[in-house]
Length: 168
Image (cartoon, rainbow, N blue to C red; front, side, top):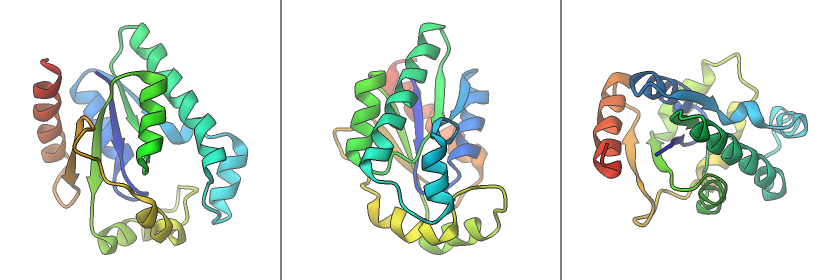
């Protein structure tokens, strides 16, 4: 079952998803790589994306997961997936998914974002993302993990829960 590592900018989605892909012999996909140029330009200008911007992007991400699965590869995706409807859109496009919500304090996330120089998401959008975040619900397959611990601990916890959830 493919995994989606979700959360706000600065939570460590890319780092954790890449580490999980390595640990599970999967393929790492960064959903940001699938944004059209117009979305990237909006975010770089500090303009939050609207649902009309996100839905086609999420469909492409889901289709990419399906394509990797068809090739026999386990997809591990870093994707914000902040709202339930975004996760539902991913599930509609890709089927059953295991979500890993990375959780951190606003202070920790702001500190992480302040140290980044290589990303199009400006720190000013953190509050907007935190306000948008709809935590995983009890009927969604997945788990919430605190990011105030080493990546290897996060990976170990996710591997254990994912394996138990999928019967692997």
